[in-house]
Image 1 (cartoon, rainbow, N blue to C red):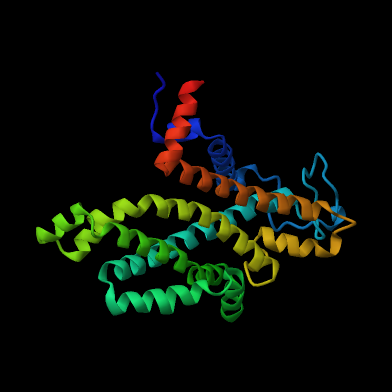
Image 2 (cartoon, helix red, strand yellow):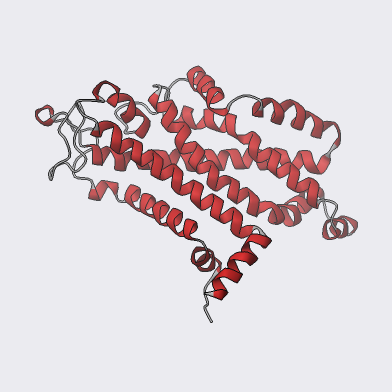
Length: 289
């Protein structure tokens, strides 16, 4: 009989979860160890070796200023993860608060939040709205985070509102209300624990969206300011060297693809595992082996 915690069971039953979890762990580990494992400083220039292809001295080559691309990708991972974590925490906090309040209170406040705020933000393409806010605020890592939070909270609010509407009339909530529990206590102690799983799945997939959005804004010159490394800014710098130095495009693009793919795989696998029907099917297949 096989044993292990929920994480072990989740990873053992899903190949996609193992792949996504391994890439995410590797990405986090490399970003944390970047100051110690990087072969050079991220802003160190060496014009004598500019546009050099991959070699033993520069595993991913150098850019137009002779900066080591591997180093800049490792430091760019720190920026991408920092931005995505801050964006997910900010969007989740705002979205959960507004969604829970709207779903529990109902009435005029629910209609205002749902119709005027949530639907208004979701009716615009997220990337275009983020570009507009980023252009208004100006470049900078803090302003990028603020722009992405403003444009991304509505999805969490809609999810939280739907979960509250589904559970607020169940027996255990009615029992807590009949015993005199305050609305705040009901939302925190009874409603929030029952909606945290789909919110965590949304947050995992939202990490991928935040990484891609930050890279897009940095590519357009509206994101992280130089000399801070950013995958999107590296792709922007490589536009003029697509043919004479294609490695400048290939490696940052692969970094973005792997990071986004890893969080999407992990989120999809987690969503399937939290579904009772899918989880029972996965368990049956695992037991039949």
